[in-house]
Length: 188
Image (cartoon, rainbow, N blue to C red; front, side, top):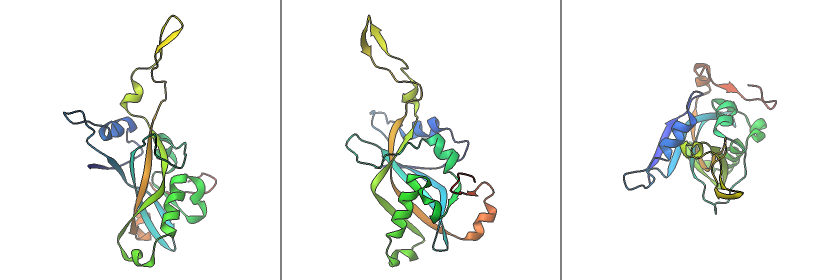
């Protein structure tokens, strides 16, 4: 089981990143099973600051998950490089899931520099890859549909299966020029 880990910025091209994750070897098998988006947002909890890295995988039909309409584009716009506080954790399902797991940790785990929390129920996430951009449109023979193509804006379903939390110093915030606190009204 191979994992692709990457940093994500506002200018990261979604399709390029997801195509790298969907890459196949010479036999046609997927190279990566998991994708880790490193240090994509921060959260404060009980006076501490945590960098959150999200682990995701392809969603199978049978996978149960928390429904979410979050796309990679919206993720980059509204979640990436934001600092969430407990009182605005409900703004996004993925942030809420991370907070819920953080609250469930045992005291012994707080001493670890990095804590991994698997979500009991994964959170759905949509992203576009190269396969969503080819074969646009349907083909008909007369009035009979013979090929159902992709539609403009189609996405592939993925699921966030866990979060890795790394404790950081609040002092880091002043050096992180692109990071902003997220407020309940959506302003950053």
